[in-house]
Amino acid sequence: MEDQPLDSAEKEGVSRRLFLQGAGAAAAAAGISRIPGEVLAEEARSREITELGPEAEKITLKVNGSDKSAAAPPSTTLLDFLRNDLGVTGPKRVCDRGSCGACTVLLDGRVVDSCSMLAVDAVGKEVTTVEGIGTPDNLSQLQKAFIEKDALQCGFCTPGMVVACTAILNENPKPTRDQIRDGLCGNLCRCGTYQNIVEAVESVSRTGGK
Ligand code: FES
Ligand code: FES
Image 1: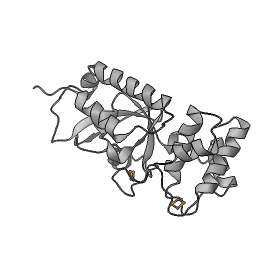
Image 2 (image 1 turned 135 degrees about the vertical axis):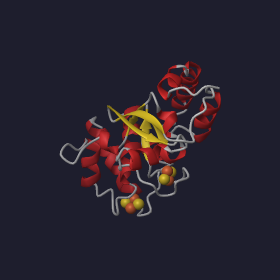
Image 3 (image 1 turned 180 degrees about the horizontal axis):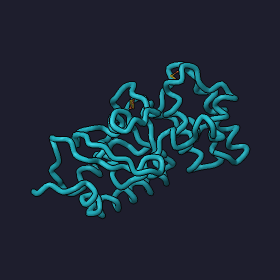
Image 4 (image 1 turned 120 degrees about the vertical axis):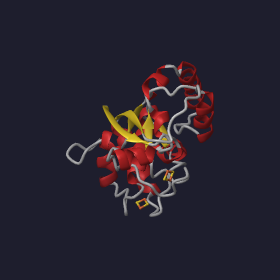
C-alpha cells in the first residue's frame, strides 16, 4: 500500500470517527469520563491500514487550540510527542503504562492516558493539556481551588488531576462526591491528597464554575 500523508489518512477515517462517537456516547451514558484502553485499541483496529515509518514523519496535532507540528517516528506515543517533540510538558510520565493518570490529557474533551496511545491517532482531534486549562497568570477556578484546598503536595500528579477534574465538571457541573471519586479512579496520588482534591472539585461545583 502506498504511503499517505497523515492528514489525508485522517480525512478518510469516517468509520473511525463514527465508532468513537458511538463508543463515546455509550461511555457517557454510563457516566464514564475516561476513554477505556479497549476503546482506543478497537478504534485503532477499525481504521484503514496505512503504512508509516519507521522513519520520522511530520505529525501535526491541534494542541490547546493551536496546530503544532514536528517530525517523529509513527511509533511515538502521544505523551512522548507532547513532551519531547512539542515541548508541552504538563503531562507527566510516571508509570508509562496507563496505570497512574499522571499523563492525562483530553482528546476531543474525553480523558485519555497519553502514554497509552500513539500521537498519530490524535491527528484531527483536539488535544487539551493542563496548559490549555489555565496559566500561572490566568488560573482556572479549579486550579485556584486546588491551591485553596491544599490539594497537592509534591505536585507530580496534579496536572493529570486538574485535567481529569476539569473533565468531570465539564460532563457534570454538579457531581456527587461518589461521582467525583469515580471520575478520578484512573488518577493516582502517591501523596494521598484525594480528599482535598474532592473538596476542591466540590467548592468549584458550588459556584457553578470549572
Ligand atoms: S504515565 Fe500514563 S498512566 Fe501513568
Ligand atoms: S501531590 Fe504528590 S503524587 Fe499527588
